[in-house]
Image 1 (cartoon, rainbow, N blue to C red):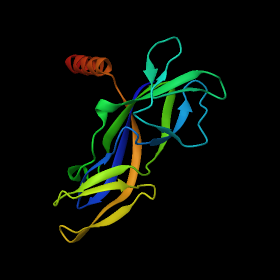
Image 2: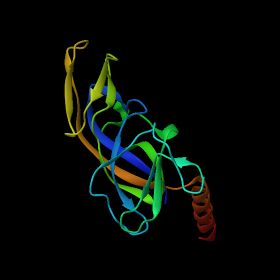
Image 3: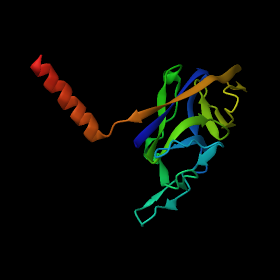
Image 4: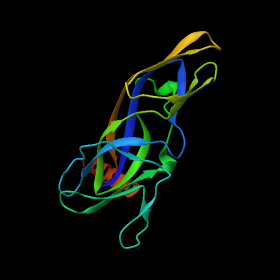
Length: 180
């Protein structure tokens, strides 16, 4: 399946650097088996701190799961080096905040919950344990005497091309330009 990017979009009010906190942060996802299409009924979470061995000693992944319907062993891994904060300049645009390496499991839905932190855009005040389950969060920044908030949190997933696929795509596009 390759890599899937989770993109967030939100309206930020006097806030920047929205990010998950710690290796125990829980990414709540609904996952689909790439073999039979079965989608998990319940929310499942992934954490950076989790590591499970793959069958046959081929390494490890954040989650390894056997499909209840087809019995295929699938895995998904959080790519920690891809985690990026959502900043004031990203306001009201989609931005990839994390990528997952998917081997048989594909995220089909995301539910933000507790464990986020952010900073005041002007003051730098740290706001911790932000819960986005309701898709909105508000507080008050004493340092600037103004309200702060995160509103209308939405998400989407993006299938990411590998570097090799991008190079091939560029070559094909360049070749088609030469032909025209």
